[in-house]
Length: 139
Image (cartoon, rainbow, N blue to C red; front, side, top):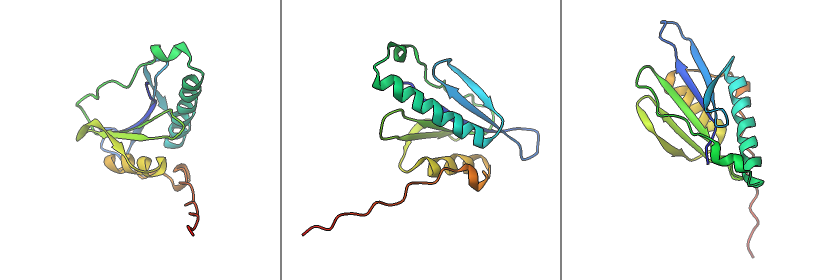
């Protein structure tokens, strides 16, 4: 199944400027986002939409496209979100262009890709990981 992703690209104008794009599997395009926060919201919404298509076994799933291979120019980092009930994350970047599984929560994956390109996201923009669950004591 195709998955939405969030890509952060460092712009080459010498300043600390970044572009945020979200891969939309339904339109097979990267959609620009105004901010990291907007991109995180959009990628989460798309993941939920893809999950709903998957649950309903919608025929549209066959038409969805995955993100293309990255261009080899410039610094970027990308986070891909699965649409299953138990979300999983994959990451890639300019120095490691193949997707690799990321063990952790979306907050940790987002911080990782931001760090790959030197972007420091506002603390409020990073989703909070769930609190640890208490384990039952065995008798």
